[in-house]
Image 1 (spheres, rainbow, N blue to C red):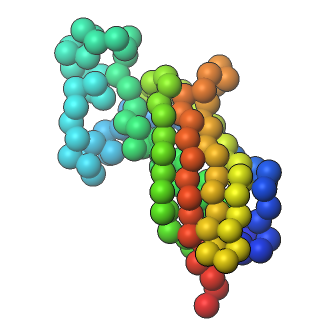
Image 2: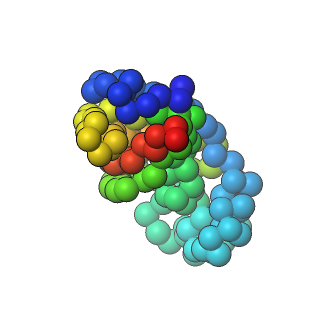
Length: 140
């Protein structure tokens, strides 16, 4: 979209959908050096936990949120100033996750935009809820 702060308005919504794969999880683990057994299909230790199968790292799902920001709303260069996320349910490889961002505040003086974040899976179950505050850079 590539919208300036003055073109943004409260209630504006953007969303993207993605299917996370086991390969995505493996690449994330390699980049972050986080090899927690809860993410690994070939580990037996996660089976003793509350989850029925390995989970996708929260950081990876948050990447879908930042993709919505970068590609759609505002769809331009910006800096993430604040983020708060609550993870209600796990995301598993093969899940179809939709990240939906809704503008809830626009501060024209500071070029700050606050967005409500909701991520849900293919069953409509809310898996993540939160809020982000962005500093939208001008074109200069």
